[in-house]
Image (cartoon, rainbow, N blue to C red; front, top):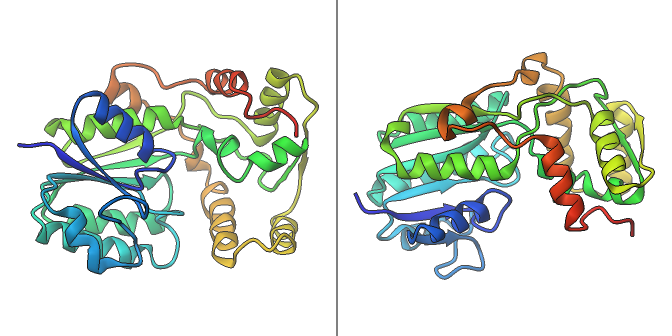
Amino acid sequence: MQNNILVIGGTGKTGRKVVERLEKQNINVCVGSRSAIPSFDWHKPDNWANVMEGIDKMYITFQPDLAVPGALDAIEAITKQAKSSGIKKIVLLSGKGEKEAELCEQVVIHSGIDYTIVRASWFNQNFSESFFLDPILAGHVALPQAEAKVPYVDTDDIADVAVEALLNNEHNGKIYQLTGARTLTFKEVVEEIAIATNRKIAFTPITMQAYVDVMKEQQVPADYIWLIEYLFTEVLADERNSEVTNDIEKVLGRKPKDFSDYVKETTDIGVWEAM
């Protein structure tokens, strides 16, 4: 089978790393993004057939998350187009412990196309590329679910697993749950970053309602507030999501990147230097 691979979300946290890894192996990669040619836009399905022309396999990430309203319809539509376009394999990035995301998984699983589902725990990079970055830079992190223990996973590991799944048929029909090797609370995360950066970063536990109120004051979009509330109340509150798996080791033959290594790498490139 040929390996013409389309990476939907090819400029995102995991997608860009999947693209880099495939290009290093001299595999023909098409980046699925609005800035690419042909352009991919979740809101313009009429152009999807053009984007998928000549494509054999596809890695799908959906922004901001498969759990959000509208994601299921989008995954149903893109899977239908993938089948029409003759795509032979889909690797879908999903969220560990997200019931709504599992509905999207089922669409791919029952499509008749070969698949691998990659369910990831919360990313390490949420603290350096996403919604936790600004509070860290400001020196004061206030979050609900302070006692929740999360086995954060690195996007390098997710990308390595996705590439392995795209290139090797032994992963067809598999669901992998990717986590780091240990769990941390938000306070422990903030302490590790503070020590590594030699900065004072305070952590304050707050209620979910207080967090929502702050986001509303900051005029955060309503759908983003919905997602954050869902992740904190449905996903983090479920103790099963603190489970550590060995799926990264199973697929890659090595341990996942430790959170401390992520913190050191991120500190070295200066992401957390105070404003």
